[in-house]
Length: 59
Image 1 (cartoon, rainbow, N blue to C red):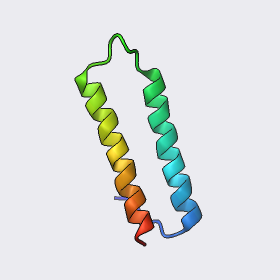
Image 2 (image 1 turned 45 degrees about the vertical axis):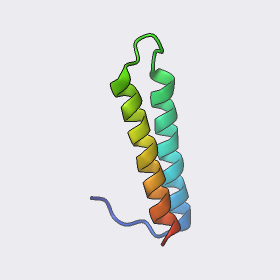
Image 3 (image 1 turned 180 degrees about the vertical axis):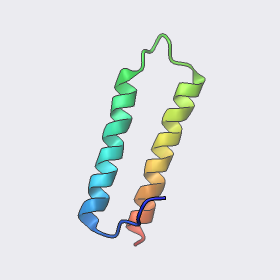
Image 4 (image 1 turned 90 degrees about the vertical axis):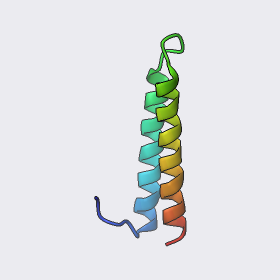
């Protein structure tokens, strides 16, 4: 695991980076060839970002 991030600016940067990665993945999907596993992975990424946000918020 990585080091715990306590600096607010670093936390915000981390969340922005993860959101940008999510958007990149989303933009790369072709609607015609997207299957349920792709959608499940997108949901998982959003849930991971949400969980990290909650961890940062509670510190």
